[in-house]
Amino acid sequence: MGKAHKLTPLGVERQKVAGLYGDGAGLWLKVTPGGSKSWILRYTSVGRERWAGLGPYPDVSLADARDRAADYRKKVRSGIDPLDEKHQRDTLARAARAKAVTFDWCAAEYIKAHRAGWKNPKHVDQWTNTLATYASPTIGKLEVAKIDTGHIITVLTEDNLWTKKAETASRLRGRMENVLAWATTRKYRSGDNPAAWQGHLDNLLPHRSKMQKVKHHAALPWAEMGAFMVELRKQEGVGARALEFAILTAARSGEVRGMTWGEVDLKAGVWIVPGERMKAGREHRVPLPEHATKVLQSMRAETKPMPNAIVFPGVKSGKPLSDMTLTAVLKRMKRADLTAHGFRSSFRDWAAEATNYPRDMAEMALAHTVGDKVEAAYRRGDMFEKRRRMMIDWARYCDTIRKEGDVVQFRRKAPVRGMNSNKGLA
Image 1 (cartoon, one colour):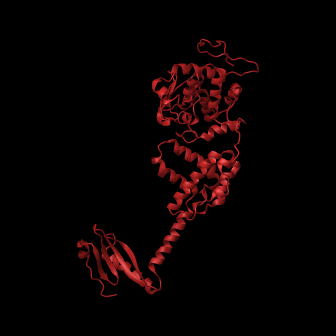
Image 2 (cartoon, one colour; image 1 turned 90 degrees about the horizontal axis):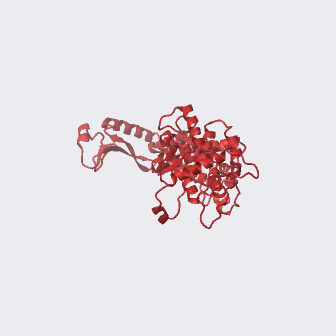
Image 3 (tube, helix red, strand yellow; image 1 turned 180 degrees about the vertical axis):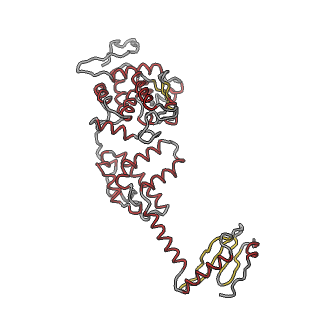
């Protein structure tokens, strides 16, 4: 191996020129063009030339490098290849880390890593809720390295999810695939992705486009609203009050669940939803009928909140309710055939079939885009005061238990010439 100890501590410190500088016995100082320095040991094991890194200078001094080189050479003489030994240790360490890495942990880390790239803050809640509701009960606590196709199939077919809720199941599959791909890239698992669709799950599950559409009765017929509201108001809990408020305002459940006290003016009877929380990305003013205001007053009396506090808080202090909380209220009422979102359809059907309020007014109440771009350019207002009258009538109707043959009267718009002014409201 030649003469050893050719280098000196001072010479190592002062060396600035890029290159390899031998200390003897296979030990080299490597200097890069950028000026960084590190130690390398050249040795031969079973006829193979190997180069092993011994650490950076000055973290590893000349004396330390010589000691490490001596240890490596001793192992070689004993028939042990130091690099192979290090590789085995690293493999075992990775296996030990992977054993403690669960799917739930990987999902949380994936969401944390991508949160900043999601333009819509709702995506965080959507990812979290979907995986927690459907994936976590089956694979959440499993070691991510052990999750296979059988586990994924179990998640997707539990309670006929793939056929009954095809869109939800498809999104769930895609999100599980992304989490498992992240885990593979981070070396927590290896092999093919068991949640991949193309060339894998498409061989085991029917494609969404080929499945027979399942008829759902998600929306309550508007004529049954009064009886339903009587039962809803018997339900206890924040979820029941949030659902009641959502029905009275015809708002989306996500808008209600994310609502803060700073968005509400009880004296003026208005709730202003900021654009970043709206599906269309535009601010939306919601008139509050007396019934909806009473719901908010009862919540404020219970919580005594700060302006930025959530109106309908979840179990975790300061956090919004999950969408599943409203679904749970319906299940307790033995109305699993309904969805929270379906009550928006109930309102729309009521406005169309039981009133003479203009179609565009009902669409504005639902925060839908009205008309084409040319019409939108000329229509600057949002019919707020007219919508207030409509929402008051809707709230009153929700307090009305209809009997067969009943006729419920609401405000009519002025009759149009040539039309029958007695065109009724059911």
